[in-house]
Length: 129
Image (cartoon, rainbow, N blue to C red; front, side, top):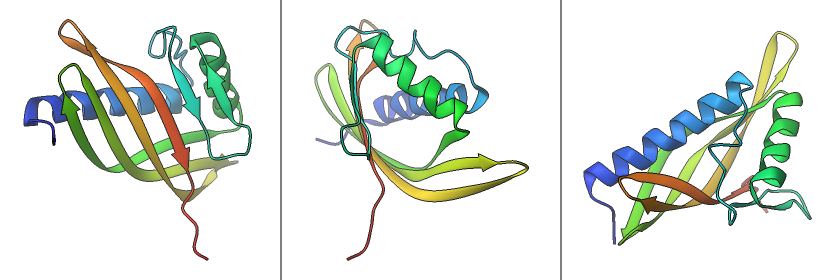
């Protein structure tokens, strides 16, 4: 079922903080620190498991000048598990300018006590056929 307002706000804040960390070039190991954290990117074979592997993926994206901008977040929740559909863009900085492409992601979060934490992040670039 759709998450309540407080959960939606907490998940959206976590997404925004994560995207800020990525854009700022900050270390995201703590953000993605759970042993079961995994990422599936939009490229063939882009599968990463565990905090070390995921953090190296993020660091590589940062070195390429990639960052993420969210437009719309929709959150669902059942108990201590929530998942979100994040519609937005991936932005590539090229010199003094940037290029953006639509980028849609799905994320899974688990509540541990009073805080939500990432468990999965999967992305894709929508295309038309």
